[in-house]
Amino acid sequence: APIIVEIGVGYGDFMVNYCQHNPEKNYVGMDIRFKRSFGVAKKLEQLQLQNIRFLRAQGQRLPWLFDKAEIDQLFCFFPDPWPRGKQHKKRIFQRELIQNLGSIIKPSGTLLFKTDHKEMFEWTLKEISHCPQVKILWQTFDLYQDYEEVHDENIKQLLLPMVTFQTKFEKIFLQQNTPIKALILCPQL
Image 1: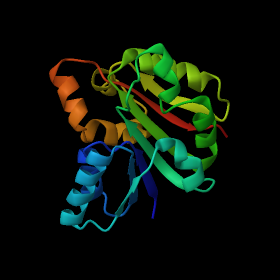
Image 2: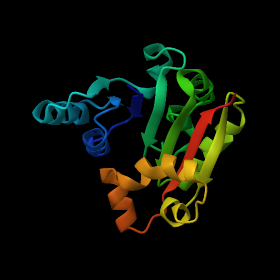
Image 3: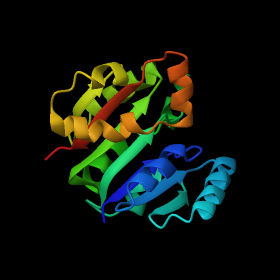
């Protein structure tokens, strides 16, 4: 079955909804924060979903956890923006990880990323521009406005999980009328 990985599951809302609607896919959720991880683990135990595994681990560990071309799709939604300059080194998408994503995501696979934080999104785009192992298939500074304008059916299909299932944080940002920035990344063949 396809392997779907989510970095930073937060409270597990997206993960649980996605898995319930896609029982034919194997899902690995990752988060490092203990309190949230404990809550997600309890929720998963109660639901007894067979297609989910949960790891308390950092996203930077992906290259050590997965083999080459093992991941079909990778989700990273609303990671900590680490807004201050000295904190940027803590952001998830550092060049080294981005380069490794080019090998652990299948050639036909994708990374779906979304955030409310404009400065971090721009910073991430700049980091990606230095990594020839990956390429951006699609990007936007306003996901829900621009989704309606997508005419490429393949891109529209890839965007479906991003617009169908929302995280707890995303619902808050949308209530505040904060545009959601998003991109689809794939290995460079």
